[in-house]
Length: 114
Image (cartoon, rainbow, N blue to C red):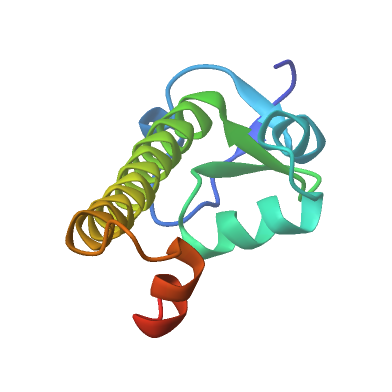
């Protein structure tokens, strides 16, 4: 990024934001959210940023990469939880079929509220 930048972020100084600085618009494209969401995340301390002398925010690319990593970890955890729930339901269904091999499966599902 060219030009001078004034420090004015969530308690950290310009040296703490290492790497390239990008505009709110660029950050919103990378994260597929609105510019307003990026500004809210900056204000909430979720993304590191600095302000230009004109008052515009510049977001640290490093902080976006960290956020993406945390989001990826959260999504993977959620996917695992959903898969665990599916496996639990499949196991319950299998057990019902084992206990009642001659019953209609839809009837069993209704009786056992699966």
